[in-house]
Image 1: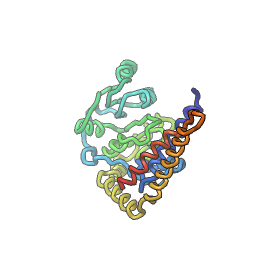
Image 2: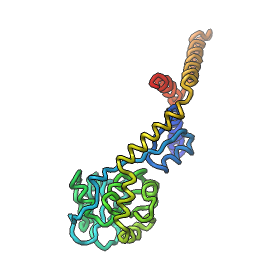
Image 3: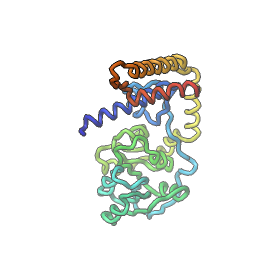
Image 4: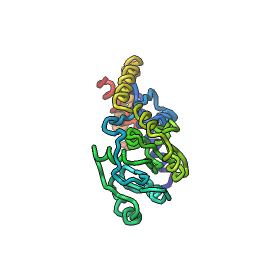
Length: 281
């Protein structure tokens, strides 16, 4: 199996999802980059609903859990796909601290003894860890939306990241983070950014604003109305009738030959989903 098979499977998956979602009044997406990709693939009625962050728990604090030197912090799963080595290999004037666990934690702790692997943290302890940092470093190249970015910004901590889709969606204000293919340069520049601006930007993603965005989208969807439900059901019923006729013709064949009616899984699941959506609406 080569890349051609992978792309075919990917196209098939998008076709199946598009069939399902385009029958709805709207589809929520968490980030503008995701909305742009789905729109290019034929998805309709896309509505942006960003994730929210607890701005009361994650806030600036006068704490230094990891000492007085500059702290470059990573929070998240410690695994290969997070590209953490790119962070640990940086020559930075301070201390590297990693909060979280994962399958790569033991190996990286052995390879990088100068870094502090603090283990998983939650709640108040995690909030204090964020507030103790000077820069939050986000080395991932694959995350579509990093909630940890919002938690860091809400804590008043500027961000350094690669210019990948996830960070680009969140760091829309140059005062709150630095995007660069040179992660070391980004981290050093982020040291000089205003912590107050980071906090101010994060307030745009408060739970209150997230809930307001959700309700606004629901109102828009209600005013737009659903696609023609009766037309969806008629298409489903017509297709089912045609399939029954094909099966009956195959059974009555005089030469007793066996024939098959091939329906793709996407069509089959679409047949199931259409009446369910119609009945649910």
